[in-house]
Each structure stands twice: as C-alpha cells, then as structure tokens.
Image (tube, rainbow, N blue to C red):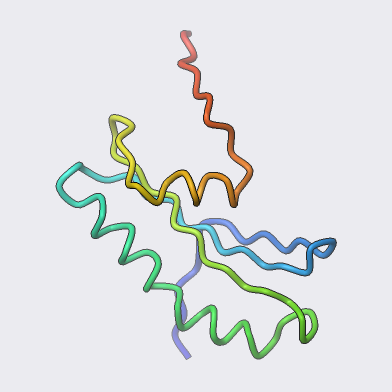
Length: 95
C-alpha cells in the first residue's frame, strides 16, 4: 500500500494519542485549498494506522499546520495551533 509520510508524528502514550502533523507554507491564493489537501492526504494513512494503534482506545488525528509565506492563516489555524500546543506569540529574531 502506498502511503504519504507526514512531516511530524507524535505518539503521546500518556494521552493514548497519535498526532500526524503536516506543515505547509503556500501563497495566499492557495491557502485554504492546501489546508484541505493536507487534511485529505493523510486520510488513508490515518485509517491504516487505526489497524495498528497502541490499543483499542488510541486516538489518531491529522493536524494540517498551514500558513502563507508572510504569516496569513486560515480560520482553522487557531484550532490546529492549540492542538499542537504552539504559542500564539511569535517573535522575529534579528541576526
């Protein structure tokens, strides 16, 4: 079976959860479409992993973390950010 590889896989045994994270940077015109595509891209992998999960209660979730190159995000971004535990404070680092 052909499966895509997510950017990040988090197996949290304390919460009995597996999170597949797909990161995407795109242009403003494609932002929402890229988010939908990344969500759908891992549907088959999520189902396959469901057959091999840690135990019967394990949850498997796909989180598309998508933004534009200049920092624009979709309405769903906050939900995804909170699921990942990412702070809403972003700092520019000057070198």
